[in-house]
Length: 309
Image (tube, rainbow, N blue to C red; front, side, top):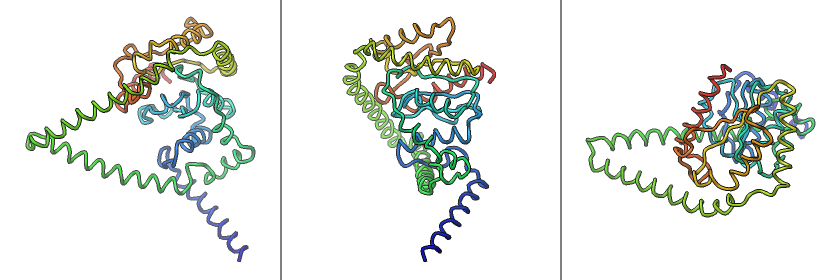
């Protein structure tokens, strides 16, 4: 009985791998169950499916929220929430990838090092097995596809609701139009209140300059990675995500910029900064709302296109 069960499990496993190879689900089809799994999926998709990307973004949750669809096929957003830029740089290095350009988010260079995701994706033996057996990759867990189907159904319902809302906002329904306008005003007021509350906590954090030992250790680590990539002909570019203007000019943000420019002078390295960072809205002072995230992603995409990559 046990032998038969093992045989059936093996057969189903082989068939599932064959189906995945034949169907070849594109990126973003499956839906993660939690944030850590989403980070692992991002890393694995880069290693096994997108290692030939010409442009790779590495960053934190600030960059993580940029919409994927705006970047062209040869760009990959390897930013992961709850980690540091060093996790992304380590993944590129250990996967032996050789992009033409690496865009490094400069906002959170002082973040604590987090190697949990890196340790998982490069687990001895398993990393080789995942290369040949796609069913072992995180995104191909059956539950991820169930979640994706549920998300698709929910999005269809939301789309239908949005169409109905727009119809009610037309001049044919003046009463409903006023109700929806009042809701939008209340929603924006609530967003501003949330930002204001979060800013109180963030002001304390951003008013403190990182310790010199931390700054030096992070800059040394960053130098090691950049030296490695430059020896392989990779161009390194820094970019700064827009945040609330009061935090943008804070002592912490200024000290990080100064340390970065001291170790990586502008005469040699390119720094991408949006000409009007105050134009963007955030959900909490540091993370962009969806509209602003799309706007900044388009700004980065225009830069990428200008490089003829």
